[in-house]
Length: 481
Ligand SMILES: Cc1cc2nc3c(=O)[nH]c(=O)nc-3n(C[C@H](O)[C@H](O)[C@H](O)COP(=O)(O)OP(=O)(O)OC[C@H]3O[C@@H](n4cnc5c(N)ncnc54)[C@H](O)[C@@H]3O)c2cc1C
Image 1 (tube, helix red, strand yellow):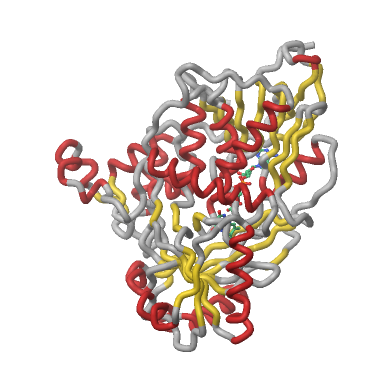
Image 2: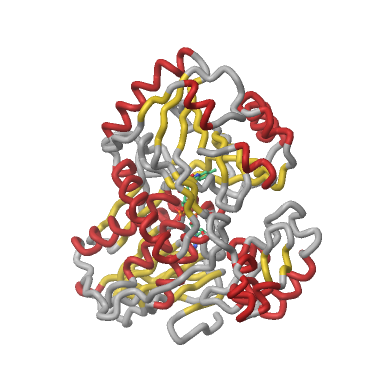
């Protein structure tokens, strides 16, 4: 028997896995977090970025409980570490008599989920609050606790804090095999041997599957069955910042049985988004936008808010929800197998990630994982502000005076400075490609999509790019794999 290298290994560094790794890093445990790509580069990078209140969950589900809890946890955490959030509230709008008739039922369902602040509002109030809305709305429900949040910073914040607390982060490393292994420092002597894509192995007392779209694949690698992930594609259109004054709240449709439907919402980056669609696919890599999907969005958008469609489109993108045949999250802990699954986290995982992490922590504790808190707790961190609701570095003369790099704009569309790019490239979890740099700074995310600054941003990234193989970050470490 060999000694295990880790007590717990989390597979997948999205909203869910990174939050779990952070939560477990509070304790005297050797924690590893492994992702075949970058932190937050799976479904977590391509969502609608709503901090849900949980009002429209299915009452009685674990999802309903964890979304409500996750809302409060992420809101508090955002204030603590500097994740952009705007407390816009939402208005759910009925356009037909049949939809109007459902408002009472939706309010009652929200109550059943424990959310009591939804209330119908009068039509004149709706149009006073959203003057750009198309004519013809028949009624609306206000949900004051639906907020917009930065989609990119949360997983990076969780993983940064975990790494600073001693968690080993392996990026660009895929788990390709899982085998039960005898390990002599695990009570009972059993753990896991993980085969990694580059031909190496590691051992771990416990495995936590947070592999998102691939959580069913990892489940089967662990010798289990019982659910399959069907990618449900959501396509979105991001409109130019000049459209931002048109929209004050998140504007929701009346949901159907299958989807929450297409919404119009401001973003924390100062744009407006329209989407997402919902199409079940069988390809887990189909993150491209489609002509049909975009046409559907434009046609719907022009009926909801004609003025929005007159604005330029900054970007289009698509994300894949990890839908399963189950009506709820797949959250399981098997004490004997030393295996936990946090899979099938469909369309609410940005909100619920921290609450799922609490659930997994408690379930692991109940299953015998010794949870002894580190004396020093989690290290304090401050994430760079990439939202528009509070001042960005270039707006702060005192910051620019101290460090002129914050006054040197590189990406003009998004006003990203050399100082911010430099900080990202020297951070705890450095970007390994342009997409990673975009998610950390907003560089290349604006109107020109990198046409003007792309070469300069790429040159800055190349100065620090490491060897292309898997990377590892750990306390005092940073050794390459
Ligand atoms: C269109 C759309 C809109 C959405 N809107 C919202 C919203 O407004 N609010 C909200 O709260 N939620 C929303 N969601 C849901 C939210 O984005 C997801 O629930 C959440 O991002 C899921 O996170 P995850 O960690 O489970 O998955 P992911 O982010 O996909 O992370 C899983 C990770 O596992 C890694 N991985 C997989 N297999 C392996 C392996 N074998 N070895 C190593 N690594 C592996 C992947 O590389 C990936 O990084 C939306 C989703 C979509 C698609």
